[in-house]
Image (cartoon, rainbow, N blue to C red; front, side, top):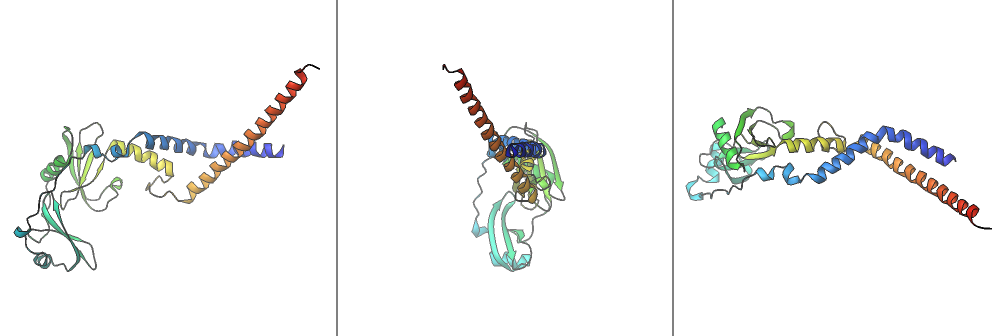
Length: 242
């Protein structure tokens, strides 16, 4: 009797405390299962862009570029960007420096027309651009820092492309689908601010409490099934002919 009473009380009161979070866990799991991750990442809105071949003979040497940029790189990476070939020069100390591979100097500031053009080239679909803006600080949803160009499209998901203001490359894509998914992800891991930490004390304690509900529920079920079986056997004995 004591075990039954204790299990009943724990099951009831702990259930009241964590019941809403259990609902968020189940709801979040459903959202993550139903919506393909490719849709969340707006991969269906990303056009296949083939990089242009880089004619090395037409470019100055890396040494000449580094000298003109005033950087002594310990690592250098040559890449194709919408604004032309670019060197990313990483010095021993400090942040990487991106310069034009043709001139050895940083690219000029990008205009709204350029940003819109590059975003449209990287976009798959027929929707028109609904807005273009240079953001001085990257929004939290991008997971980036520093300024970014944001180009919005008038499609049903309200897709946004975020572009590097230096090279014009699309660094990430976001949409209302991503934002809906992100909301349930934050509720699921109980990190409502950054949506990144799923090992914090609150979720650990809540998980332990939820485990106690499961254990006490099993105990209650075991006791009640035992009682029902005992009552069934007693009923059969009394109803059987003498």
